Length: 179
Image (cartoon, rainbow, N blue to C red; front, side, top):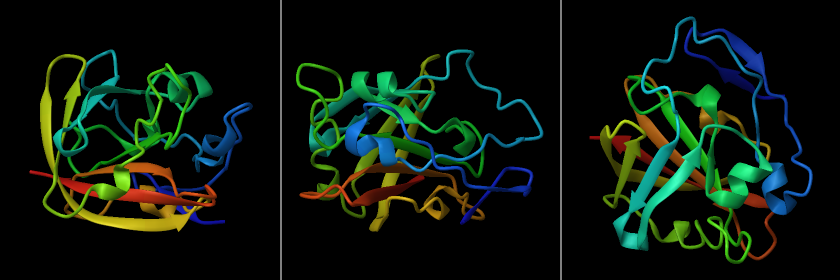
């Protein structure tokens, strides 16, 4: 199984989880919680809010948990991947492509594949801290690929993930670098 490297360089083997009733989102790769070796800091409420002007998205919540409820109401931040205020983090957020009608997940990342290098993404934390990212790449990976969650040396990243269409087999991951 692929390994996920933590902040203290202690590798853990990936443990995929299934979220009951999550449909295609149930295949989100998840990792064992790992020891950051320190408190991640930042605000007590770790909810993030994502704004992507090009896609017309504003203040989409990224809840700090991998659960069907988070995916139904917005998007899910994978806590083990770090936070925007942590230097060197690869902040990883997953959301539905189609989602549930009349909820925060309805088509939330439907147009994610329309983001290209140079496009801007803004993240706001619950205390009002603002972080600007510029898209650097878009990749398609198998649903069980956890390597895209790893930190990248000397970079602070935001990774957004959703399903491919029409079959939901793979995942589109848009990576952006903190500027």
